[in-house]
Structure formats: structure tokens, C-alpha cells
Image (cartoon, rainbow, N blue to C red; front, side):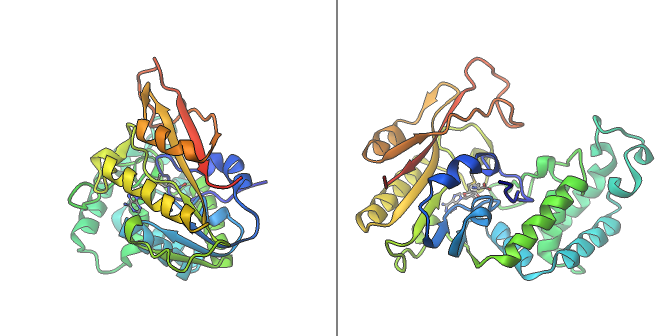
Length: 304
Ligand SMILES: C[S@@+](CC[C@H](N)C(=O)[O-])C[C@H]1O[C@@H](n2cnc3c(N)ncnc32)[C@H](O)[C@@H]1O
């Protein structure tokens, strides 16, 4: 089965694991909660009457809401106008040669300065011609690996990408927006501790894909660091759901680059643990240290 791919690229995004994760979810879910939705790879592919996608990052939630409320054509037109205003590249129209580069070198040298202008104006809120969400998404298109990164002062600080708004990204944006249009998805913007679980019943299901405590990737330099306290609070919140008979699944890693997550390993003993045997070895974000780059990816569930 083909899944819809998010047009946002998250470290730890679950697109490649969907074929392993989704079959484990209960059938006949009434309300599905994707508590740490990020790029929404899971929420967009789930079959459920109602879907709630939550994230702490306001800009991402606003962008998702905007994508849901806007037609695909209108957003693409807006992105292309922003590209034109800043003089960013259109390799889809002109190819790489036109810009004096090739595919392996990529477009950083062409777009760096215009990208930095766009990033500066986005951070300072000085471009009033365009919708802020469209500016943000254009920034993400021209960001390194399409990965979102804000610093501790909530200033967008990702660097420039080798690629631009190319065929693949256009395709995932289109299929994602069509799927959004079709689904009963509602977006919320809160810390998981403040999320309102009070309306959930035993027919509902909560999926959690938090930042991974022991992984070495971007989160620990970002505005929403994931601490041991966050991790323990999440375990408590999941235990409370379990006591209420509400089903959940938690994605995580027990081992990464030789480090073990002992809090997780102890906590998960009371639940069913499914080993997803995934390796991030070939990921853009994996460490250069090849000595022990294996990752033990698990899905922890509280039902048989
Ligand atoms: C690994 S990403 C989720 C990726 C997503 N499953 C996907 O496939 O695209 C984790 C997300 O958790 C969010 N997050 C971090 N701390 C949070 C918190 N305290 N409450 C809610 N969301 C949080 C981050 O903003 C990020 O989007």
C-alpha cells in the first residue's frame, strides 16, 4: 500500500516505518490522537473517524492548519510568487545548468543569499505581502533537507538547501494537501502535558512519537529540548491513559550509538514491546562514527 508522505522532513519522521507501525494500531478507532505530530506522517495515513494532531511548535501547527484551509493550487501559486520576489531558483523550469551548477553540487551557491534574506524577513516579520505560513513553508522548501529548525530564541536558523521546489517535493505537497482535504483532521498546539485527554474513551487511541531522549540529533540544539523530566512526565501521562483503559502506542529507541535509555527500558517492562529493527545508518542525520550506529527502534503498546 502506498502511503502519503509529509512535505516536511522531520528527524525521526515515521514515513518509512508506517508499514510496520500502522498494522499494529487497533482497528475501528473512534478518535485518533497523534500527540507529537511533527510532519504528520502518521496522522495523515491513519483510518479513524476523527483525527487530532498535536504539536508544541506553533509555526508547524499553523502551517498544517493553513494547508488544510487552502487549496493546493493557491498555495503553490503563493510559493511561486515568493520564490520570484526573492529571486530563488526554479530548477523545475530551467534545470541546473541554467544556474551554472549540477545536481551533485546543488543550488546552495545560487540560493544562499536570497534564502538568508527570506529567513531574515520571516524572523523579523517584515514581509507583509505574503501570508506568514506560506513564507514559512517556502523557507522550509529552501532549507537543508527540508528540515525545520528554530533556535532557543525561536528564531528560524536552518541553513540553505541543495534542492529547490522540485518535482518530488511538489508531488508530496500535492498528495498531502489532497489527503488533508479529505480527512476529518483537527490540529491542536500544546505541550503534551496540557493536552486535553478528558474526552477520550476506550474507543480512542493515542499515538506518541516524541523526540528521542538518547538520540544525538537536532532537538538538543533547538527551542524545544527534550529532557529526562519530559520523558518521565510522558511515561506518567501514558500510565494514566492505561489506567483509564485508553489504548496507546509509543515510538522510541532503547539503544542508539551504544547508549541505552534505561528509564525507558524499565518503564516499558509493564507493556508489550514490538521490535521494529530499524537502522538509521543511511540517514542524512546519522553520526559519522560508524563503530556502533545501530538503533533499536521499538513500538510500545498497552494492548494485546
Ligand atoms: C519526532 S517528531 C515527530 C515526527 C512525526 N511522527 C512524523 O513522522 O513527522 C517529534 C515532535 O514532537 C514535538 N514536541 C517536542 N516537545 C513536545 C512537547 N513537550 N509537547 C508536544 N510536542 C512536542 C516536536 O515539535 C516534534 O514535532
